[in-house]
Amino acid sequence: MRKWYWFVGAKQAWYYKKQTAVCVGGITAAIVVLMVILSFSQGFQDFFSERILLMTPHLALEAGHNDQVNSDLQRSIESVDGVEGSAPYLMFPGLIQRGLAAEPVTLKGVNWVDENRLFQIEDLLESGDWTLIQQNEGIVIGAELARLLGVNTGDVVTVVTPLHSAPLRVEGSFYTGYYPLDVGLVLLPLEKAQNLTETTGLTGYGVKVAGFPDVDQYILPLQNKTNLWVRPWYEREQSLFIGMSVQRTVLIWIMIFTLLVSALGIMNVFLLRTWGQQRNVGVLRTLGAAPLEIGAMFVTQGLYCGVLGGALGIAAARIVVAVLSTLTIHLPQVFYMERLPIRWAGQDVWWVAGVAVAAGLGAVLWPAWRMTTVEPSEVMRNG
Image (cartoon, rainbow, N blue to C red):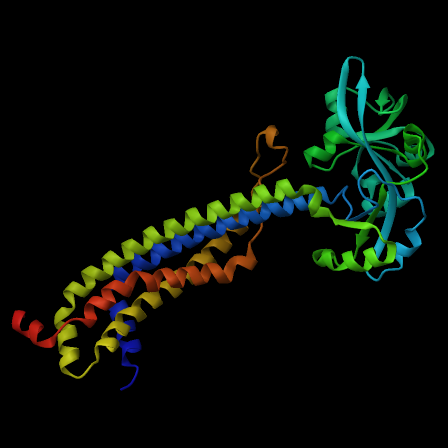
């Protein structure tokens, strides 16, 4: 009977079910930990992406460093397919001062109507009245900056720029949950920003697109339409995402080495199993089984362990992530997070399953090779 080793391998795995359970359990445990870690990594990445995009455009169209846009391109920008909205802005560095306290900030002059169309600023307000904000010439600051300076809505602060300084009223404060924005961004009317910088131009336009996951596909059409430098949102946060990517890679390799330790344990189990099965192997060889078929019989057992361990590990990890996502795990205030984020890393399931199968197969290669060298006559002589 051809391919008999699949059937015999399954019977052997069931006969030595305690040893098989240990092998499957080792792979399952490693896969659960690996998938939970990947899900935490996915949760952190999604958390920061969502918070950053609360006040950051999908694409920024700018003339370049030390240059300004002096023509109205808003209609041309919004004529590109997939663009949902745009907003002009003028961005420059400055200081916010109140008494002896001063904080460096990024000042962003905006058109309130267009900016609200992109970011729904009125929903992000922690204090202040949106109607009054649009009517007055005051500023809107991040909630964390307001706490650092000890100011409330209605207080007057001094805005210092490279060219001018001016007292301005705090009309409100916003909260995104992303610390660099909440402590370092100040919004003010576009006309007031142009007066403070003695210019009539713009830094550029912020753009919101419909196909956000494929944001890069809009870069070339917008460049051709406007002749401006188009920058995707993640480019401004490269250091953050590079750091998260490095951390994720390190954790993955740590868990892969942990899986290798499990594979070594599985290999030891199979080495003991092969030691006790030499007589059976000798009988099979006498009945005409080829050495490669003997090796395949043991390889299939490793394959069964890898497949079963991977499937159970992924299923168990899915349950663990679902349970953890319902729990509110509070973090110290220094982390600037309300809860520990976790989100199922579904895009990693296939390669993790492949690692589990590879671990099961790799663990039995040496024991399988040893069984291919068994000679029937030697077994019978020593038996």
